[in-house]
Amino acid sequence: MFDEFPKSRPPLPDEIRRIYSEHYKSNREGDTTASSLAQRMESWLHRQVASDVAGMQDSESEPVTLELGAGTLNQLQYEPANRSYDIVEPFTTLYQDSPLLEKVRDTYCDISEVPVSCRYDRITSVATLEHVCNLPEMIARSGLLLADLGVFRAGIPNEGTWLWTLGWKMTTGLEFRLRHGLDYGLLMKHEHVNTAKEIEDVLEYFFREIKCRVFGLSKAISLYRYYECTNPNVDRCREFLKLVVNHPVHENLQR
Image (cartoon, rainbow, N blue to C red; front, side, top):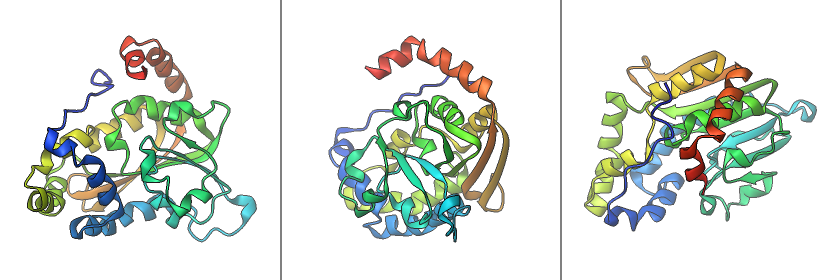
């Protein structure tokens, strides 16, 4: 099942690579008409991930959270109640000037940097898992970092389905072509290396209990999915990570 991992990103054409960083940050902050619309749509993902802490006021019961792919820290506006909040985000320029950074306890560039002694009540991600080339490793490590009753909460675009493809082509893709005269599909192939089905398969392998909700009619006809995963298979997580640590491809990626 994991033969395709870790995946490799298709290279970007030079004309897209030159504007990549500026476009990426602008897109995450909703600076354009299409990205602003996308942000409003994605608010469903943010609300689903934060639904367990919405309205929570008792500081003694506030959870310890690790967010994967924190980006510009926009999830924090939906999560006022967290005793401690750590993040994993390799693209540090996205959050380094954010006033919300004061609410973050520890920052990491990769989940492998998180001390194995840490335990989290919640591990969350919003529109992140589709980007991760070494997705099974990230999920396996997440399973081991969860507290006994911890929950892995993830919102993802419904990548790999016709409705999701139509959605971005008619909005962000069209705007990108009008602004830059370039094919947004090439950027999407570079960014979204995992489909929603592949993400679900990985989650089902490492967690015994999974719930899924969709923003639409079904998994096949929706724009977004939300997953709530509990009871990780710790043995599978450990066995997989033992293989990964000794894998020569993985060692090359770490250099």
